[in-house]
Length: 451
Ligand code: TYD
Ligand code: MG
Image (cartoon, rainbow, N blue to C red; front, side, top):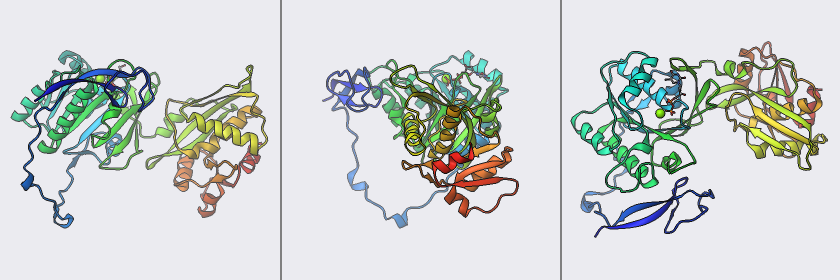
């Protein structure tokens, strides 16, 4: 018989516990447990056991992936070449970053191409959506809106008509009657997502679900859903800065780490075709502590400015901050400089930043970070037309990176004239006209170039 039980779930990572806890043993975050009612022993799915037998892989027929375009080249690339027909895509990001806007624009492009779209919003009223739509442009009649919170209504509609694409904005506002906990709680969003996955696969609809990433309140983070969906896209960027980066962190139909760059304008999001240009806009001239690196974002090289400020500390313990970079990585590089290049940095505060709100995880930016720190420490600007990249190891060696040639070409395209790169990369590279390529094997060698 079905029995209701109370279980506590961590709203960050989904850890389950019979009693409330202050700190989650799973993800170590504090105050994230919420009580939810779960029905145990409810109707079990009856399996037709004899009907299910394994199939030899040779007999499995391959169905061709049906893909169609979103109307945005940037978004298509992040998705791995357009929308796959029966897929479930999660679009995550901070509130207000532009998730609803980009999806609405995508819907407009898709309906323009003759497909039907159902936009389910549990967050905004029809007139609010209409107001946003008016800023974006004109829509066709195949763009259908449904403002409900219950998934059952959506399922009722799908029994009658089948759109090509469906948007659920947002997963945190959708509920199903089968589960009695509050909208946005872990059990609700998991159940709703599982049902949407079934709909996508059985009916052949591409479904996009919006998920807000937030730490406060009872709104469950979409990170719990990552393993349940086909593709996970994160929308990031500084809300105050104009541009946004869309990043694929999981993709069953394409490569990850691919990024798309957009700019928020008066009429919605616009694609940025030359992101390096945007990233370097407003770069200070002849200023110490500013260096350009070239990072690979998926298949695309991207030039990014790294800034460092090193000053005498007024405290016993020097302050170190890293914005847009891994804090531990910056500390490691400071230690390498101190030990291998003899710079006395232990008495200095060091702040290292990436301009423009983007996040860099590529270790090839190490050499650039080192240049920025040393340039600020010595208060001497680095040549404005220089780009540096290379991974730095603990013994101060500069290690090879991938796609070196492509990075050098990107630097050349943007008008840079000198590249400092790992020696092992340089040795394999052919000569590039109009570009001075310097190969370095160690940090000490690299520092000789910028004195
Ligand atoms: P929105 O898509 O509502 O964010 P999310 O769905 O991720 O919460 O984006 C909201 C922000 O975008 C809001 O601050 C206003 C801004 N915006 C523009 O600057 N231009 C536009 O054309 C639109 C539609 C929104
Ligand atoms: Mg929204």
